[in-house]
Image 1 (spheres, rainbow, N blue to C red):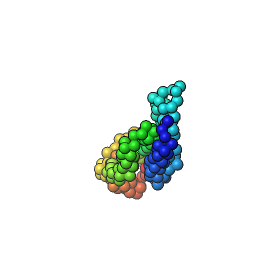
Image 2 (image 1 turned 180 degrees about the horizontal axis):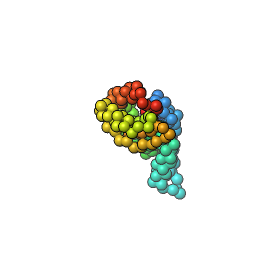
Image 3 (image 1 turned 180 degrees about the vertical axis):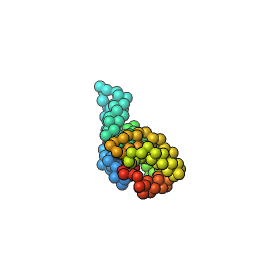
Image 4 (image 1 turned 90 degrees about the vertical axis):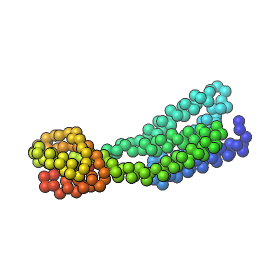
Length: 210
């Protein structure tokens, strides 16, 4: 067993590493925030530390079970909202924080600190790049309800072309005297906004979901 001073140093490092990453998640109002990240880092640290001094089990088995357990925890923060899957970044962060806790327990301080900086860089610095990419290219699902007239679909698709949007019609349904069309549409945020303004003022559109 490491000395009491070494254990205190490692526990302090657990709080710093988990706290730094948790602060970023808390600032963005994510489901796994400050306290959660500290507890995940602490839990993986304790499991790894205890496994080294248990004579009836092997550290490798404990480590593999940590990875499995964290997988279940990460799955709990992933959810689907509208047409997007949310929480994947937080789930990946949980996975990384657990690995950092294991590294602290093994005394790999330099690797843990460098990895913590990389995790924070990915969460803080790459968010802006992700935002720029998202503005350049977005995938939306459009649902348009109109009076029954199949020629209207050609008119809507001409509008997609006019607004420089690529599209794929995925469903066409007749309901009473209405015809309903659903498209997957891809393009820049600016072009999506152009199409939305045009379609909202179209005299034949009864309902428009976007």
